[in-house]
Length: 407
Image (cartoon, rainbow, N blue to C red; front, side, top):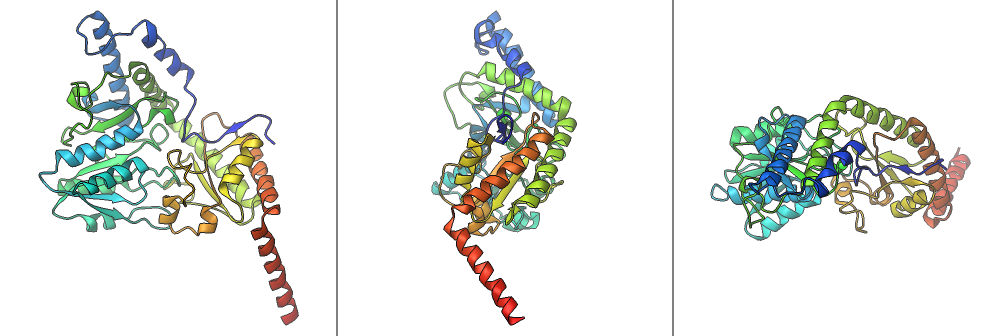
């Protein structure tokens, strides 16, 4: 058992960096104005709001800070991207192309639009969760107005060929949206070389606060607001801005930009170490998605373990001081087979035994060794109580005996 609790659920939430917290504090009581006000209190916070836009623009290499829109979180940013682009371009067409493994906030936004008359093509992925750009190209029609393909998958960490998909969209004059909420702050993002028109970020996944999301909008990407009632965010998102969270998110973006190479390299090292030990110690286990490398988020290990239930394994690991997830936070409570694992064709017996571990900057190599040993013992204990495992062992022993007799 680890000497202290090991947190491996950084996709759900990261602790707020102390420097982020310090940057936020004045905006609760001292610098409390509304950025829409024209007096000194409003102008002071307006400057802070603009500074945060610049910090996010620098993180993703946006051409202008005016291309940054603040929302209440990644889910709202994704809703605004999908619905806003669809509504703004519906006179040109009503067809949307989307990958089959997008985040629920994207897929459910698309499903909502489908009920109102939009047509949708859901592009399949291969066994590693990668979208073939040729499939995207073939899905395009004369009525296509939006293509949505994420950067890194929230469940299996698969990194998509975003730039190639973006080029396909650009040649056709179609808005291309990329959900980068699972990779922003950890993997370098360049909206100009990626050819994206819209891109979303979630600062709470890279040591920023909850309650703020970011949507990048290229100047040529048309977008209609989906929340009405005010002229904030240049008329793109009504409502008083959450200044403390926005300032904190901006500081998290600045810190991420400064330490991106070190943060990325550290996560990659831990990922390879933990995966190697898990596959050596735990029988009948496998990695879901691409192997560690350029096609996988460095933070993500989606491990499928046969002959155990993922929820039981998660709870037992928590009891022994290891905090993991059963899947993306928005869908982890569902008892259904995760749709991403179904999309890559994973056997249900493996999908039911999948746990998701997402690494952070404060995790250590020693912790990875302890986690691997803890998972090994937990799996052995759960299998010892499983009639399915007992039956499998009996069948295996019988097959071995039969081979010996036949030999």
